Image (cartoon, rainbow over all chains, first blue to last red; front, side, top):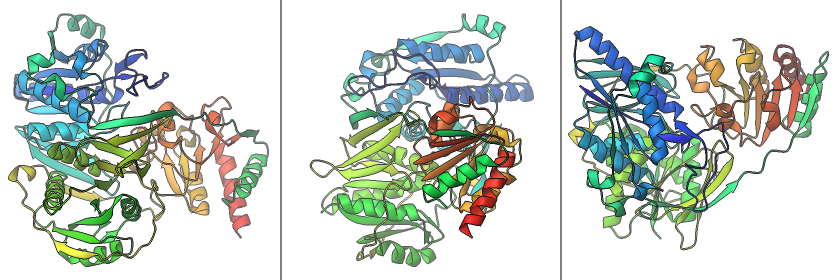
Length: 267
Length: 326
């Protein structure tokens, strides 16, 4: 069985994220890392591998970490290898820079096709930079796969997959058969830290680098120029003005706060 | 004028407020056409509702065959409606969907099918030069505002709640029963069990004017938070720490992996203000924080802060609110 986990290298959310002069996200001048939300996807892929491996007594399951991004993005798949993925693929090509979600999903789809048939394509719930959550459904659409998304629990049996998820109005159980795409939330289970052994083992694991030509993707169909959307303007939000801070003593805090809310006409 | 398609968000025919906001936006861009996907018996109520907010046409899609099959059939249905509109003259000026987890997936699939640009979580949509929609989004945890437009295909845009004040406007509301052909491939992932969440009786988190939130500092006791919320007529929210501790359901989580909210008033109680939480509430109009730790980063955002124990401050405030409201 083959599981492909799509991961993204993103600017560190706790750092100073910004845009470049052409209004694309600065992905090089800002410290980056494996998107936290994709760590959960790697974790779930590894748990499926471990559980099925133990249950079946030796089913061969290979977990491939796949990323599309600048040379620095290798750090993201290195981390996935350290966590326990078996191999990694890095699609890197200058022509990809500035791609929108349509371009990115096209490159991911072609890379998954080249890597061999995937029984499960695993994704995080969103990228911590764009927070769009549209690449997983786009990828499923391009690969002709069903999608079961925002899972907090993932279970597999044979080629059947069951997930649990919480929507705004209900808790749902969703069933589908492989091959399929799964996205998981941060509620799906703590992602493991790479062990020392894992870090050492990762150095010997295969990591392939592919270009657009390797995938048979025309450079003109991706990148900023081929984007279906154009950013007109990016404006830094002015920092919020520091407000009044009072220290509560014998109920004074509640009274002061009530005064503030009344002055603002909330009560 | 070109048609602007608006997907109706409804519960058994009861149309939700974000739909009216979308129809109001659609009027700026062209001629609003609503798309109803649901049970035929619920269609009349929905048609009457969207007519009052300017829908000139309503495409009614019977979902009997596709109910329970998640988003793929809905994406196919919208693609077919868009194609029919294009064939009858001009392509839709835009396809607007109320922003939530499900519609973002529909939008993603639809964008690939139509080879069209997609923009998610717009907080404003206005006609630009030439009439095409220009969107405003809040990105990077609310630290940046981005204006953008779709440059290829039919703009597919998901719009966040409260992005426009709904304006009543009589529309013709002429009904077109629309037959869709759904592929077998679309009917593979299926809901096999569902357990409705108990209604809290409070406003929806993403639509509320006031939100009272609790975090780690509640120690698991949300009663003071809930009591204040009820006194103010507010929704209840929570930080990820409170959700991860199992104190409150994930549906109440505000932040990067929960809801992004932008209420008139946000009261954060016992919440330190990590970047993941700020990402979900930073654009609130007025922010109030109550926290024992005067160093908590939430105070950097607060218009008003109380350094104190929420377990004493909130009950006293609740009494004060009730007294003033009489």
